[in-house]
Length: 348
Ligand SMILES: NC(=O)c1ccc[n+]([C@@H]2O[C@H](COP(=O)([O-])OP(=O)(O)OC[C@H]3O[C@@H](n4cnc5c(N)ncnc54)[C@H](O)[C@@H]3O)[C@@H](O)[C@H]2O)c1
Image 1: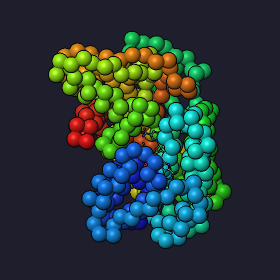
Image 2: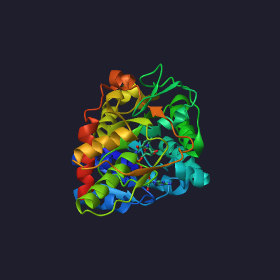
Image 3: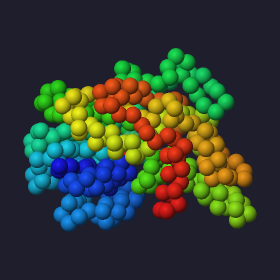
């Protein structure tokens, strides 16, 4: 198989690329290396690749001409995994134009290049639950460690679209273009609306990748604690009761591979994807899990900042459509997954 992966040096892209390298497929990566850790992920992938199995192009997907030359050189592809993107909501508020260029124009360019050079490829797009907006109108219940929604355990694909924040708008527009290019031009597209994903190769930052970020804070506080040094608190935005269903990268890779197997059944479809209710965590619940996994002698120390603009208090994906059509469901429970995250952070 010949697989094109945009954003292939990022967290999800590099995990998917590694999986296709392992199955002896040919992988072509387009990545602008905008994300810290990208070079390290590329080096890691190169160490796995056999000769000429991996080709890397350092390109901005917003530049149509340059993206077209990559397609011209390598197409046709069997599979296009479009994971290149601007990923942080906070960054999108600081620089909405860059966010729009990458997420909306970049996706438009991927679709148009595929239409011109590789019309038979399956194109999978990594969208987001932020297309459903802030969800402020839901009826929330505040429990001891988490928020809940009164009349829903989880949210399915019929939840109304309500793009909020530049990130929500740029990803949401791209999400709709991807589906529409199936409707109007017959491209074989599928959209995955992701919630929180975590795991190895994720270089988390203060504003993106919260499981990885807080796992790192916990490891650091634990070291200070054991050395009897003064502990510097980290910060969290809001009460810490906001909930997401979390999905381990290994389950994400299985999903993208499974999508290719089921390519004839899923064209034009959209799926909500996440760890489901039993793998949902609030920040406070993650902290308790980290304290337990690290056998910490005292609780984590943190300070509260005001809640973030446009943050959802609760999102758990209803994954029954993916279960039904793709026969896919998460296998890595959040306790095992967070333990693996800690192991990877220790190694890294
Ligand atoms: N990780 C999550 O929890 C999560 C949740 C919802 C949606 N997503 C979506 O999944 C995709 C991948 O996320 P990730 O966690 O791997 O992020 P990431 O930041 O680790 O990877 C994104 C990659 O895209 C590259 N990139 C950014 N702008 C580019 C551009 N203009 N041209 C070419 N490459 C560019 C970056 O250099 C980076 O390597 C994103 O589109 C993101 O919106 C991720």
